[in-house]
Image 1 (spheres, one colour):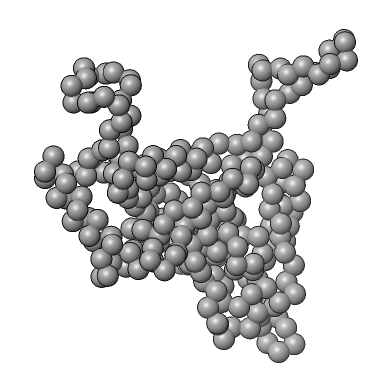
Image 2 (cartoon, rainbow, N blue to C red):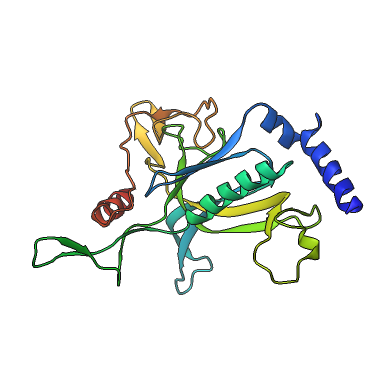
Length: 267
């Protein structure tokens, strides 16, 4: 236990120390905000970001032609995927409980919004059928982390879908335990609550841009579509921007899917 305490105190000092980049973000009030689009529910974590990467991958189809050494490439699209991991530390039991509640809410964002089918009974009353449900909206999310993760047109959360979350408690730091002395209880009892002192979370966000992308020809030359300078990180860019570029609205309802696909094809 003493070793765990020493490790915990060292990591705490690292997070709270002046030399810690994560700590400076936390001290300046930076947060990682994630919203569940179907419900509007949100979670917010202090910016103890451990790893961040933003990958842009272009896809081409290559046609092989007889007698030609090089294929004829045709551009398909450029896809963007963000990978992020961060640490959620707890320095008290109350903080650990609150953080675990936030993690519970975060993990629930991987699930869609359902509509329970209903039927009208002969007496005119509406009865709920619990045997089956229809998906009304998929679990899209919006993620905001300063200017590094944002919608370049609005400055709000960046829309996308997640491949999943990974939740890794730091067992090296140990746990807070609630209940009677857990060390004296037989293995397998359920009335002891374990609260991690630190949790590492990570995800990969597949980005769905809600504004047009690419270049268009203008009277003065060429301009980047998107409606805001500095795509994707919001800096003051010398690249001219087509401010009047049409917005593409992405929603999770069945009705909007066809319109969304049609609009994206135009891009």
